[in-house]
Amino acid sequence: MEDNRRYITIALAKGRLAKKTMDLFENMGILCEEMKDPESRKLVFTNEEWKLKFFLAKANDVPTFVEYGAADIGVVGKDTIDEENRRLYEVLDLGFGKCRMCVAGPESARELLQHGERIRVASKYPEIAKDYFHNKKHQTVEIIKLNGSVELAPIVGLSEVIVDIVETGSTLKQNGLCVLEEICDLSARVVVNRVSMKMEQERIRTIINGLKDELAKKEQA
Ligand code: PRP
Image: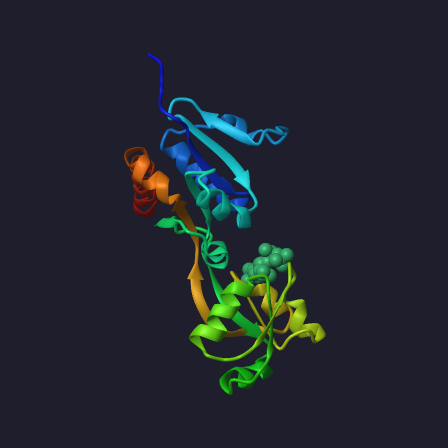
């Protein structure tokens, strides 16, 4: 019988999150062998049985693909979701990729935070930093956008503090820095396009519930 269903497209943030997510799909019986081939230059992978398409994208671009409906579903870190602030539904916490968004710096900078001084804050996440300092702390600060190795900023004198992800804390420790304030907890999340959620409610629900069941099984194991 002809399968007239349209493909549901899933965008995954490249790297560890994608690998862990595909493991969950595999446990659900949704296989995508082609995706595992390191030699492959293919960008989009299909599963005909479920009528699914998967693609890998840079984390920051995943919310964009989902907002515009180029992907119905996305899997990406909460940090990226908050930074991009796109119109989409966040429907599931996958519980992996756990880390924290923090204000960090040398111990000596703690005082500057307590006294609400006008300091410089370097971050790969300018929107999260802005929201935290301006809207939550009501502290006027200057935010400087960096693209990586953010820990350098307070060391070389670019800024007093940074807003960055802390996972094990070893990068901070090795550079003589520490967590000064915690902003929020982070982990991998599933996001859904707002129109797809209505138009493909049943199929999307089946996928989300399948993921939930796999997570529950893992927790019991
Ligand atoms: C992230 C983050 C910290 C580090 C935290 O950087 O920006 O630098 O990991 O991990 P830890 O607490 O376990 O040490 P990433 O490795 O993504 O690279 P980047 O510095 O280029 O942003």
